[in-house]
Length: 110
Image 1 (tube, rainbow, N blue to C red):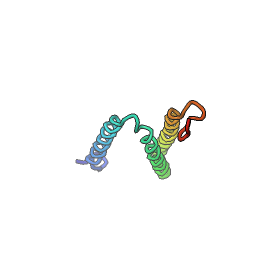
Image 2: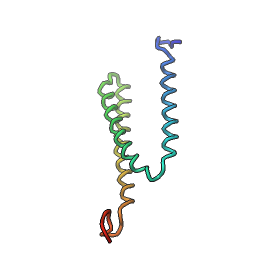
Image 3: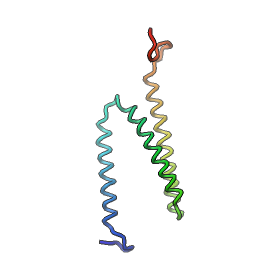
Image 4: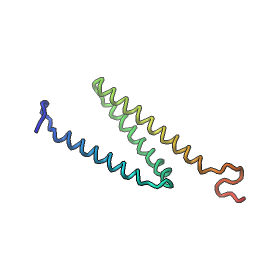
């Protein structure tokens, strides 16, 4: 079955199916992560957000129409915000594990 532009509509449905499956799987996996593992996983996901940001910049560089440029710019903006926000959240979470008393940091004797 093809749409009015001659493209295969099945490709669109397949892409939508893969996106929905990935979103559902991601949600189910993240929902079951224990609290103790959240900080290391945030650090790893920040790396992935950096790759997403590079991909968005490459896509923006290949944009030709104003609509593509707008979508690419929004992608870069959201990717940069997501990566920067992830590092801020990770830093705040790591601050929770630091000792508030001087001289009682990690590896130091009382």
